[in-house]
Length: 111
Length: 116
Image (cartoon, rainbow over all chains, first blue to last red; front, side, top):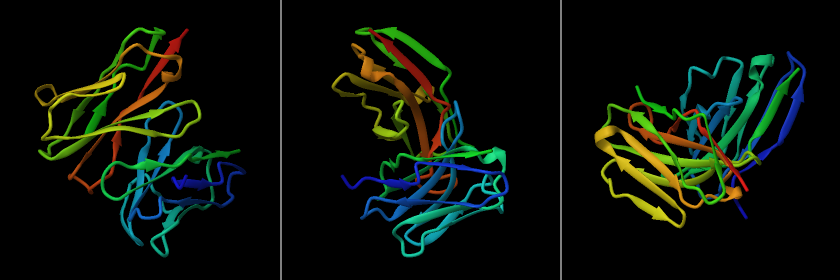
């Protein structure tokens, strides 16, 4: 199965530390999205790539957040100086332009 | 601005009962897509259906059916003869051209609990 994969699945970090998550989309998909989901809520859009170009960033994405997709394949999401409010599930999705296929997510806990 | 409302927080049914999940959306665009996703306890979002704004034909897929009504801005989802494996959170989502193509606006989700 070559679905969307994310690594790590779980991350526990102390407040103030930096964390980086990775997403590997379905290989032929040119669009990649990052979402954040908190308990009891639906996913919220964070940012979007078409190939290697980051085309949109949500207001939710503060300056502490940065995302890259260097060769139009995998993507990374980095959070600097983590805060307790960053605790959430970070979801990655990819598509060719129709429905989005989601990865299993990275659950971040900031202590 | 686009908005998706799922007013039902949780629905509990006994196996074999039918369950209908409501979804009401708001958008200024005439071209948009509506989606349903399932999120089982494992956490991974599973795509169920995509409909475009020009196709109001209802759809049935096995025990699942969808009722799209533009007049009431609703896209409701029915599970017929529910099974324990249907227990999950179900999300309705909207994608339009207001901000960028493809970005999904999700509702808050409806938790479905099916007991034997």
